[in-house]
Length: 456
Image (cartoon, rainbow, N blue to C red; front, side, top):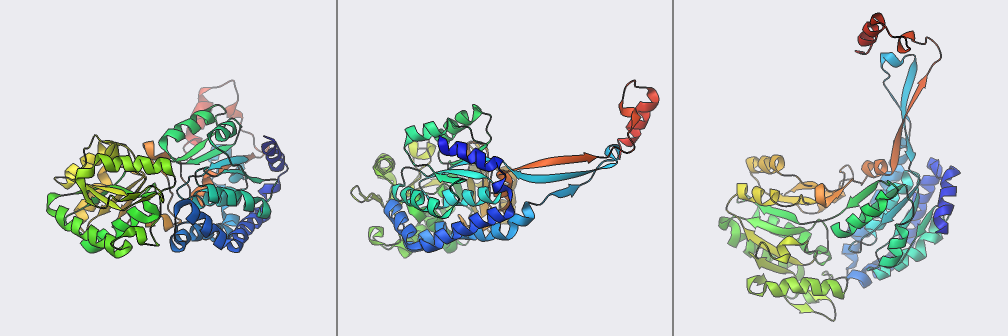
């Protein structure tokens, strides 16, 4: 692919290394967003039925916030810094310098088709890399808009958008990159990792899985229900960190279900299909997949279950105690269905979670310090969020990433800069005062002196 060869020449020239170039690209990206705000909202609505407010808070403003942070911090993060030099290496001095990796590939996901392409781009540009962007082919309108806008605003010798289907992506993955970042499913993550292994290319995989939500007996039920409903049904449930299922004790089951129903009606009305704030499923294939989960659990529905194939609408749906071996409990739902599982105790809830793959996010709603401590110390997840859903993403000082099957590597803020950088150690030794003990022939007195000096 010719543009990749061009990027290698651009990178070798040193053009992308200057902080001025990096800032210039970030400012150009900001200008692209600000001058095309309405077109972006329209594309997101066309792809996912997102309302303007949801598109703004979860995609548009998210990227602008990233840009502002990197404009402020890149100069500092890109500086070479001194580190200590042990006595055995004196006289000399030691430094670590962050340097860009080269040409990186960023493969975005369809559920947040703007944020999951442009947020990693911000970090990669700030670190001084050339970048190939591969938007998801499923989010057609947003992919087309990015392909149209990016060449108009960003340096064409260093940044490109590559559109295409699975076959095109397969060809793209045959190319040699210096880093690959992929956001999406575990199955495709394995394909990306296999392709990367051909060149020993490092990867960042932001995957998904089933993010549990524990509701303790001691909690603020009204706020708990409101935050779970919001976190689950924003983007019609098509969020990798959405609560995938709820674990609740028999004591709290009925009060929680009642509170969830009330919160659902308050946020989306009695007929969410008429709500301008409720989205749609990305395409027919995913509509059929989620509808299949519904059909298997018809007798377990608490509220919801309505569908409209023509508009790809699936109502926000609560399901009680589905079979634990059924697809809805073994596969990531990635849609507006929320199973509620009755569990005997907090100990059993923790065991339930630990018996499964490590989740990308784990949610706990509790006012009990002992319960919070127990969940914190006895579970493993990409992120633990206590008494809220999704909002941890707004903290730029947090790394975002999974553990185990939910992903590897992380980004956001400084963590993104680090992901797309190599921290090169530099030892600069003086020719003065060369130590003869390092050279053969060796002797006992040389060994004694070396052991003594090695302590410092």
